[in-house]
Image 1 (cartoon, rainbow, N blue to C red):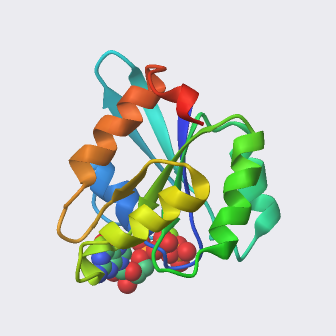
Image 2 (image 1 turned 45 degrees about the vertical axis):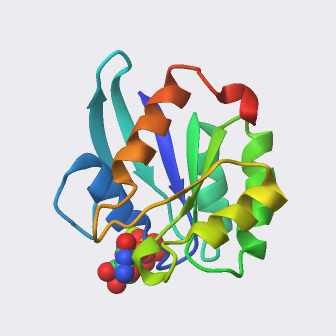
Length: 153
Ligand SMILES: Nc1nc2c(ncn2[C@@H]2O[C@H](COP(=O)(O)OP(=O)(O)OP(=O)(O)O)[C@@H](O)[C@H]2O)c(=O)[nH]1
Ligand SMILES: [Mg+2]
């Protein structure tokens, strides 16, 4: 099955985002959640282990992933930048996600702009708690799976 991977360090909000995208209830044990996308079919969202915890596991998951969401929860994102270059090499189409965006006074906009500036990637601000940005991210994932916008990376 086609896979969308969710990458980010510990407590960056990977699981919460996976459940927000698939409308499933939070279940700490689950690492996969399927979603049906019209015109694309069934795809699997894969919640990876925090990238700062178990690098090899996360790297392994990267191999089979078509679209990668790189979560960035705050403005120290050196680790995420290193991961972005690895993910790019794996051939995945990457979307940067400013996660837990409700925590920022500006909704994460300035951080998203900074991420785009250094990485060249489109960055979307999302809050799993309020639901802000979830729909926009969903649409972006669909576009990437349909093959539009892949040239960006
Ligand atoms: N304010 C806010 N808190 C969030 C959001 N998403 C997750 N959190 C909180 O952040 C913490 C970590 O969220 P998780 O979704 O478990 O993060 P994770 O990346 O899956 O964590 P690990 O699996 O332990 O690496 C929890 O306390 C969540 O309630 C969000 O959008 N906004
Ligand atoms: Mg988790």
